[in-house]
Image (cartoon, rainbow, N blue to C red; front, top):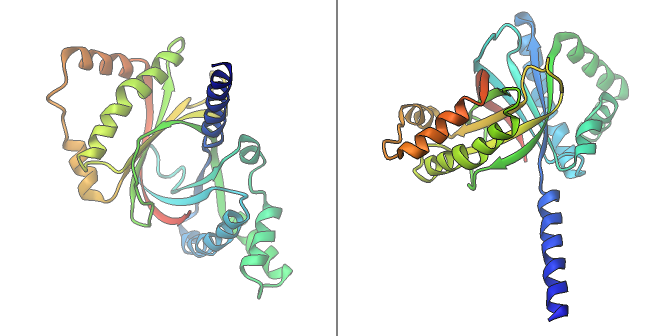
Length: 263
């Protein structure tokens, strides 16, 4: 009996360890490019897809997305969102610096000289700005087999939990809103949903504390989801939804289209 108990405890610890290892960490770069230089930057980011694939093959990252904004709070502030995925918070904080990217560029494009690679990055840095960067950890997501491919739509909803209601808001997303999104996915009205907590920046002046990612395979699915209303909710369920909504401020919603993806 004692041996069985030991094995059970060991199994639980292993399951907990595996679950921790599966946590996903993401860096969101909100990118601004001057209108007269957009075509130059589009050419550069298309080249970078192959570079990030080298980083994925080397297990430096878990994935990379490049999104074009369709709408948002202020599209003059930025037009693109770049997301880099990591399986470890230390890897996330170390990130993909310019030197590392240049090394992978030389592997992806062996015909380019060191001078050509350096010039390519210098030009890219000159035409873009990153007015906002968020470091985030995924807290929970839906169970689905959503396929990330160019043309997919997503809304990025930046939230700020009200002071004193941080835990209440997180519990609402996990226990109230996640089942709602899971139900929509099972009805074919949504592709994927995930809930993330901001790791940096922190503090009362931070613009957001959390973010939800809502993904759709196309505009038809997106608009069907907007029109959907669950008329079968009980009064108790509606109360839980309202309490969850009242525990946070929805700062901005950005609708974006996936242009490049590395998985």
